Amino acid sequence: MLQQTYPQVSHPFAYELNKDFHFAAAHYVPSEKAGKCQRVHGHTYFANITIAGDQLDEAGFLVNFSIIKQLIHDKLDHTLLNEHGELFSDESSALFPTTEVVARVIYELIAAYLQTTENKPLCLQVFLRETPTSYCIYRPVKLLRQLQGGSVL
Ligand SMILES: Nc1nc2c(c(=O)[nH]1)N=C([C@H](O)[C@H](O)COP(=O)(O)OP(=O)(O)OP(=O)(O)O)CN2
Ligand SMILES: [Zn+2]
Image (cartoon, rainbow, N blue to C red; front, side, top):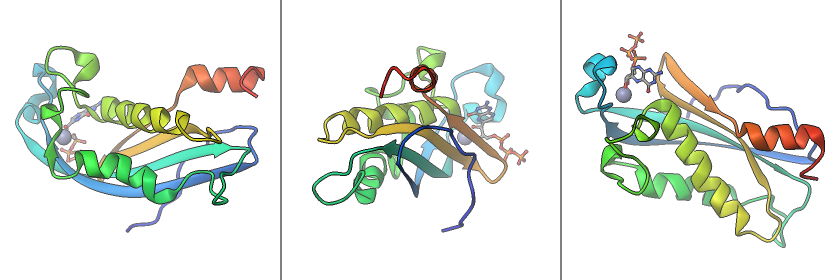
């Protein structure tokens, strides 16, 4: 896989891990503003996930790299994103599978999993590349502001 550096998110934690993975998926954006992207087309999405925390689990992991990939890859790879009715919807722009929304949904899926773990690390950034020239970064700003204010630690 292509190696690249990603924008850093500032945080106070001792450990930070990053997981790169990719998945192939089709989508369409059901808005006139999307032009040609209203038609079904496909991408190889490249994701980089940033997770941080102070505590390791009994395996010495912040979180198992392979689980982070599985959570997203097993669900979305070789699917039509618009058909995931539990994640996306053609009825509301907040749920159209744009790069922005897909990045946020990936964050939500990973954050929900991390809350079930014993050491509860935090997802701080999702970088999602949709094409060679287009990518989006989602950051949980409420959480990051709480971290800056010291109220999560
Ligand atoms: N803010 C967003 N704009 C666009 C999105 C999106 O998700 N968020 N999506 C699309 C299309 O789905 C398309 O997949 C990507 O568009 P674009 O970068 O324009 O792709 P091209 O390969 O045509 O771009 P080049 O400029 O030729 O590299 C559109 N906009
Ligand atoms: Zn697209």
